[in-house]
Image (cartoon, rainbow over all chains, first blue to last red; front, side):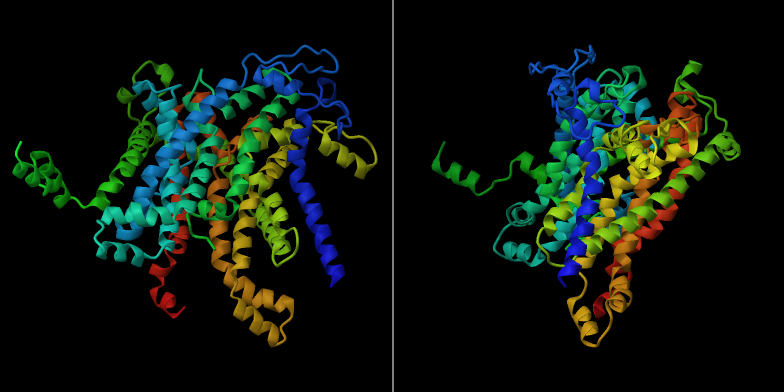
Amino acid sequence: MNRRLAIRYAMLLFSAFLVLFPVYWILMTSIQPPTEWLKTPPVWLTTKPTTLNYGMILGIDFGAQGGTEAAYSVSKTAIQPFINSLIIAISATVLSMVLGTLTAWSISRFRVGGNQFALNMIAPRMFPPIAVALPLLIMYTNLDLLDSHIGLIIVYTGFTIPFSVWMTKSFIDDTPVELEEAAMVDGLTRFQTFYKITLPLIQPGIAATSLFIFILNWSDFLIAQTLTQSMDTAPTYLSKLFAPSQGQLLGPQAAHAVIAIVPVILLGYLIYDDLARGFTFGAIHK
Amino acid sequence: MSFEDNTRADMGDPGPGAKLLESVRDRVSIPVLLVVPTVAVLLFLLVVPVVISVWLSLTGWTPISGVPWWEAEIIWFDNFIKLFQDGDFLYSVALTVGIVVTAVTFEFLIGFGLALLCTGDFPGQKFFVLAFLTPMMVLPVVVGNTFRIMFRPGGPIDSVIAVFVGHPVSIQWGSTFPAALVPILVGEIWHWYPLLFLIMYSGLSSLPETQLQAAKTLGASPLQVFRTISIPNLMPVILIGLVIRSMGAIKIFDIVFAITRGGPGTSTEVISLYLFRQSFDQFQIGYGSAGAWIIFIVSVLIFSRALAPLLYEEEIYPEEAENA
C-alpha cells in the first residue's frame, strides 16, 4: 500500500514539475541580467538576480546593477497599459455582473423567453471573435469609439454576459425557490425577495463569477488589438513588446508577463472550485 | 399644510408619476424588464455587427476603395464561391481542424489522467489540484510568448533534447514548418488541459458512492469498476468538456499570433489568423466577413446540436429525470 502511495506521489510531483516549469521559467527570466537572457545552455538558476527588468518595464529605477551595462530601453512603460486594463476589466466586470445577475434571476425563476432565449445567449460565444471584431471596428470608427475605455468596456460587457448569466443562473438554481415563496407570504414583493433573500444567499457565487469574468476580460487580446491603435491594454502592450522590431528583450518581456499573470493566478486559486462551473455555463458543479 | 393632507400622502395617494409607473408595471412584468438591458447590450454588440457583417460579405468592399461601406457594390455570393476555391482558406480550415483534434485529444488524455491521479484522499491533494490548474489562469498572449522563449534556438527545450541525443542542438522552432506546430500545440495543450482536468475531477468526485461500493463488495476489479461504473457515469461530463473545449480551440488566435504570426509563409495560418490577415493586411473586408460567416454557421450547427441537450438534460429527457 505504501509503495503505491509512493508511486502516486512520484507521478504527481513529476507532473507538477512539468506543468509549473513554464511559469518558473518566465519568473526566472524576469530576474536575469541581460547577459543571461539568450545564453546556451540556458542559465537554469541565476546567481545574479536583478530587479533591472522590472525597473525597465515600469519606468522605475530600483537602483539595480544590470551585470553589464547593456543599453536597452523600452519606448513606453507598462504603467498606462496596466491602468487601462484595470479600468476596462473592472468596469466591464461590474456591468456584466449587474446585468447578468438580473437576467439570470429572471431566467431561473420565471423562465423568461423559455429555454431558447437562454441558449441563444451562448451563440455569441461561437462566433469567431474576428467575425465580430471586424464590423465592430467599422461601427466604432463611425461612432468615434476607437481607442476609448468606454468602447472596450461595452464590448467586454457583451462578450462576458453569456458567462455571467449562465454561471449566476446555476447558483440561483441551487437555492431553494421555497425561501422566496415564504418571504412573499410574509409580505415582501417579488423583487424584494430577490435582493433581500436570494442575493445574500448566492454572495459567494457572485464573488466567484465576478472573478471569473474579470479573468476573461483581463485576458482578451484580439478585440483590444482590433479596436485600439494608440491606446494599449496590458495584452496588446505585451504583444508590441514582443514584436520583432523590439529585439530580444526577454528580460523586460518576462517581467511584464509576470506582473500580468501573478495576480490573476492568485485570483484563480481563490475560485478554483467554481472555475468548471464558469467554463461549462453552469452545467458542471458539485 | 394640515395634518389630514399628510396622512393622505402617507397612504399612497398616487401622483401622476406613480400612475405612469403602475401602468408600465401592469403591462410589462418585472422579470421581462430585468432582461431588457442585457438584451439591449447583446443586440448592440450582436445584431448590428451581424447586419453589417452580412452586408459586407455580399460586397467587395475594401477601405482603400474610397467608397463608404454602406454604398459598396453588391456582388452577391462571389465571396463565398471564391472562398471555396481559395487554397489558403481551405488550408487554414484543414490546419485548424487538425490543431483542434490533436490539441483536444491530448488535453483530454492529460486532464483525465491527472484527475485520476488526484482523486481520493491523500495529504497535499489541494496543492496538486491548484498546481495543475495554474496554466488556465495565464493570459493567452503570455502563454504564446512564454513558449516562444522556451522554444528559442538553444533555449531550455533544445537543452533538454540535447541531453537525450548527446550533442548540442539548435532548432529553429518558430521559422521552419512542421516544427513550428510543436510550440503552438504544446502551448495550446498546456494552456487548456486544466479545463478538462477540472471537469473530469469534478465528475470523478461526484460518482455515485453506493454503486462503487456495491461493485467492490461483489468482487469487481478496479479496472472493471472503472469500465462499467465510472466511464458510463462520466459520459455526459466528458461530452460537455469536449464540446466546450472544441468550441474554444477552433477560435485559436493569440498563441499562434505570439509564436509564429502565421509563418513561416502562411504555413501556420489558422482560420482566425487568416481572416485577420485578409481583413487587416489585405483590406479584403468583404471577403474576410464571408469567411467568418462560413465558420460561424458550421460551428453553430455542430456545437448547438451537441450542447443544447447537455445543458437542458432534465427537460429533454423528462421521464429519465423523474426516475433518477
